[in-house]
Image 1 (cartoon, helix red, strand yellow):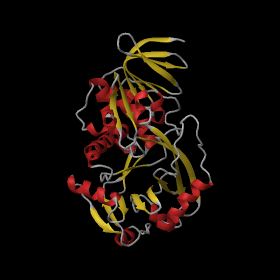
Image 2 (tube, helix red, strand yellow; image 1 turned 120 degrees about the vertical axis):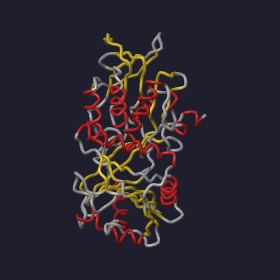
Image 3 (cartoon, one colour; image 1 turned 120 degrees about the horizontal axis):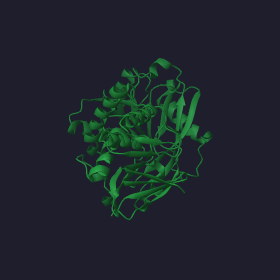
Length: 380
């Protein structure tokens, strides 16, 4: 096996949503960065695809995310300006459910704590304002006008192109087989084509991360997820300027969705679709009739005018941590190795700032961003 003569400052394994942003932020600092991606750039094999991904300032998962999402918005706008790519679109966002449910209560509390502009509306008021919805009249929702979606494929390409413009080297179709610490405290990364050395390593390989770090075993578990795009019966009600992105908690589970964009259908999915943990190298990538039935029955009840013919079905993977919060840290036994993992189905909106955080950890060993709740030590 050949060994590259060049010693890099940092190698990034995985050039998807998080890895492309990390490569960009490292390269901006003048570091010699090599990004290695197993598949294409972008690709549909992991978690960083799907045409549109929700972004929202209201955050029911935990208020600690709010400072990060504020920075993420700034960085997405910066990337759009720098690259000329329309990576972020503002449609408004709705988090709704029964009044005592965490989706509504958590979103409302995060907006109140951080003075985020918002409105509290009943289900009846939401249905009247946005006729594509059909929520129970007594539900409550938080409407936040700055919510919307990020376009993942454009974001990845934008970050990759901007990284290369700053001097980074990115190689696609380079399957990483493993890594080891070198005698001088650096790392050697093995691929089928050869090996590469660097002072530091960032693991941003999504569902495959746990295969490269024993510390992530049982803490970053891949799960099969399915998305559907249904052709609306009344298309105008589901366009981006008429239909906010949404998170909805109902007796059937917790669902999310987005307006028509680049596929002739309203997009939706269910969190933890059918609770199927998988091996990312051996799982059923083909959506089936049961997947479609589960999503269609929900959509027909709560978005009846949006549930016509199926336009597209697609699979992806969540990578879940035990508490469904991110893992952003260096490895305890290998401080030269940084990991970004366990994004638990709600991470892509943060990719721009996660890239900045992982670059901080790789370059400096620490970050000014508030990430204490995302450290590996919480699982000790």
